[in-house]
Length: 137
Image 1 (tube, rainbow, N blue to C red):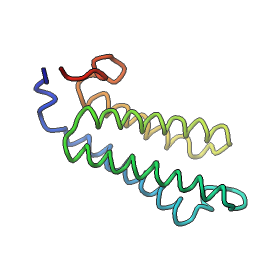
Image 2 (image 1 turned 135 degrees about the vertical axis):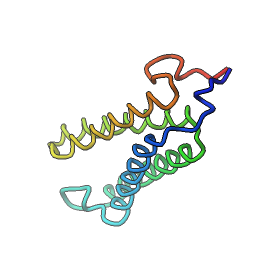
Image 3 (image 1 turned 90 degrees about the vertical axis):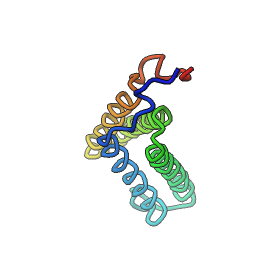
Image 4 (image 1 turned 90 degrees about the horizontal axis):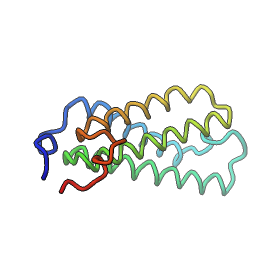
């Protein structure tokens, strides 16, 4: 049974998390595509171009699906994508720490926390509960 909460429109504040987050993902994809030297602190070679291409694909796929599920009002898929995006951001923060890019960590963590907060509120079932991951029978 689908709850009334799942059938109602998404709260407007959720767009204030998803849209800027998606725009940041798109911006990262553009940087990786147009100027991959900004991603590397050394020589640009074929490997850097390959991994920049992976970043472009990852970021664009996430951004497109985040915006699409938001526009459709698809609560559960949006929540799942928000959790995925938050986990990616947390792993990016770990890599930034490992590689000594300390100035990037607060922003990346802020995005992760905002996405986790939004994901927890989007469905009415916080993502850390089993109900958030089960089909709405």
